Length: 186
Image (tube, rainbow, N blue to C red; front, side):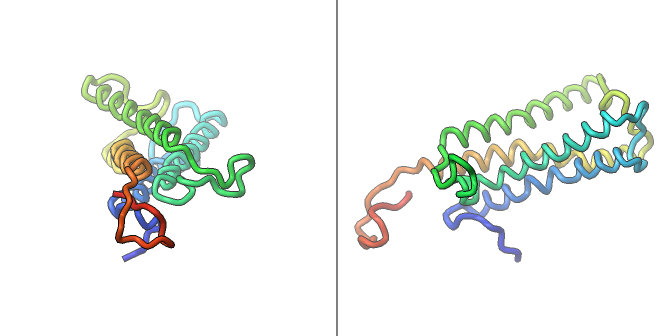
């Protein structure tokens, strides 16, 4: 089994969930890039440079935001990397990181809710000017975009594990020696 990189005190399920998020976002990005470069994944009414730039930027931003989930299980989510000006080496605020991650989970939750409502209500099929036609394109679209439904719940659970781990009460433990430190997490 592959060893996933994370802090030693992070639960295994949280590590797996955090590493899954960027992988779940990737298929929709590949679909958008394929669409941008003319692959027959959908039909665009009016292909323009602005639309192509938008699709590429959306793909990059979505993947970068998904990668931030890894910060909730790695060292750079607890201490800012030294290479960052002004912040390098300082601890990451638990409240700030948790609030940002919860806000980040709110976006995908809201989009999932809206697109589910739109599908059930029969309003607005896809993006304006982009048409998924035929069973193959519809199946490909579904396979590439349905994993996005898991983004928000996974981010939410990893965020709650991060918050719980970082705010755990410290209690003295007589079994620990003086050189190991005065307390342990419970």
